[in-house]
Image 1 (spheres, rainbow, N blue to C red):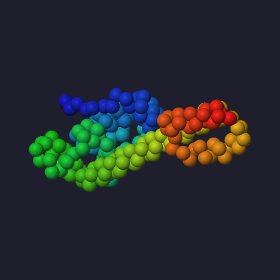
Image 2: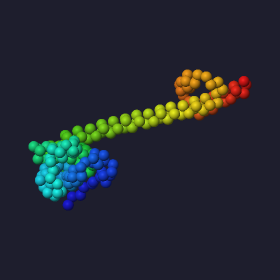
Image 3: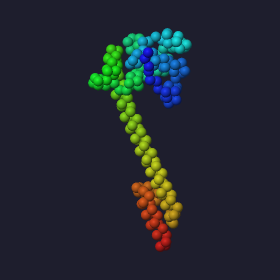
Image 4: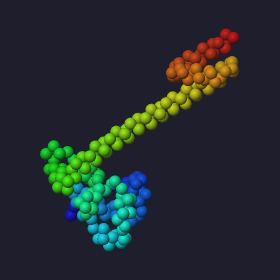
Length: 199
C-alpha cells in the first residue's frame, strides 16, 4: 500500500482550495490518493463518481481545477502538475545516487511528462523570484512609510517648540528633505532653545 503526503493546511491556508465546491474538494483528495507515483491518474470519472457519491461534470471539474491538472493522452490521463514537487522535492536528473528520484524521473519520461515537469519547476522558481521581489518592494515601501512618518513626527515636535509660527507648509517641505535622525533632531532642538533663550 502506497502512502502520500497531504497538505494539512490546505483547508485553512489554501485560498484556491477553500473556494472549491465541497464535491470538488473531495475529488481533489480522491485524485491525490488514486494517482500513480508521479501524479498521473487514468481517467475514470464514472468510478470516482460512484465512490464519492456525486455525479461529476467533467468540464466544470476541469474548469475548477484549472492549471493544477494537465490532461493528456487523448484526455485519458490527468497529471497533477505539482505532485512530484510536493511529494519528493525537486527531481534532479543528474543526481544518479538518488534511486527513488531516478525511478520517478523514468516514470515521468514514460508518460512523456519530463519536459512539462522541468518547465513547471522553472515557472515555480520564476514565481518565487517574483514573490521575493514583491516582498522586497513591500519592505522598502514600509521603511519609506516609517521614515516618512518619523519625519512628520520630527517636524511636528520641532514645530511645537518653534517660536515663529509662520510658513508651516514650506518649513515642513524643507524639513522633509533633511535625512533626519534622533541625533540631528536633538541638535536642531538645542539650537531652537538657544535662539529662544537669546531672544
